[in-house]
Image (tube, rainbow, N blue to C red; front, side, top):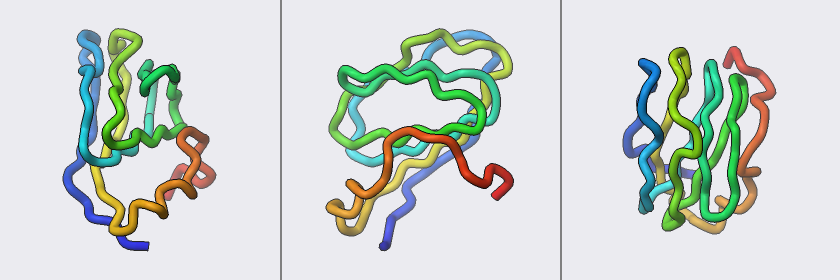
Length: 101
């Protein structure tokens, strides 16, 4: 399985704001380090906690449901699958099995 990494980063909240509402043309995986990220994708709402991940799909509206709290921290990566049919094999939300890796 091949993927093309586009960009990514580490977000650390200062205690204000909310995840912007938007539609992206790439996949995004979010892994929360600390705190709770309130976010929706289409009609599903998620509260992603430390040690959990969320996979956001391309061409679907997503955005914040909770204001950022101080101490919220998460990594995010935007990417594309070389073969988009492979994407259906991954659960959208879950707990990291081996968080240290």
